[in-house]
Length: 253
Image 1 (cartoon, one colour):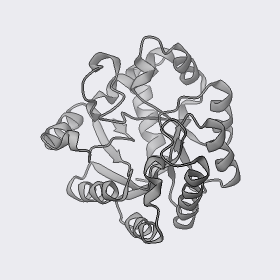
Image 2 (cartoon, rainbow, N blue to C red):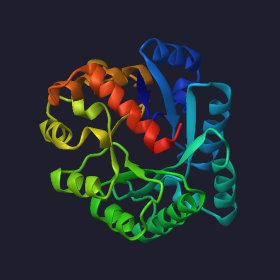
Image 3 (tube, rainbow, N blue to C red):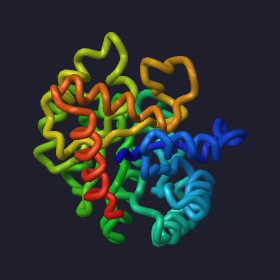
Image 4 (spheres, rainbow, N blue to C red):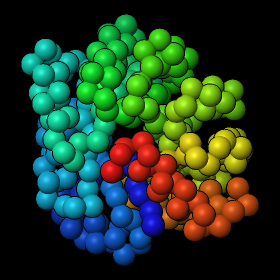
């Protein structure tokens, strides 16, 4: 019983063997794969794949690096796509101050517009935060996601994790928790409540240590779960069951 709550299965990296990737995920025990949108075209692809595969679900939204696409017409289409029965969230949305393809002010405006859309539709949100911890938290304090949210690929410190947990947010954990020099992240996930952790791959990115340098895929979420079990002095089965239940609670599938 496993889930991958953040996988870009719609990306071109999977075009040649997508069916085989899904088969390997199923063989590894993965029973749900969630594809988040990044731009409008990706949102459409994610919904199409969710229609084709029972195991696949979608979220729709504009990633901050594509926030320039947030025209009124685009937001209307995202609202329409979000009403599809297999669309379980809005995302990934947020602020990215690493690439800074738009100003922080412009990114925040689009972030807020999509949070309002999510609240209007009663959908949870998937948050992208890169080098923007305080900026993202300030928006989320001010405009709380009524149906919940996950901080995707959480990379903050203990105080940030504690505040996010106190606000009822989920923390997403990916391949970097397995990296040899990432003791700080392991310490964070050793201490936060298990009921507020989701496991992710972010495939084709953030490949776990055993496959580092190769394309990531949903089957490899097993290594993330195994690492959580080690650092929490727990069993693989306990972590797998708990994180699967957490995902069901947030995304209501």
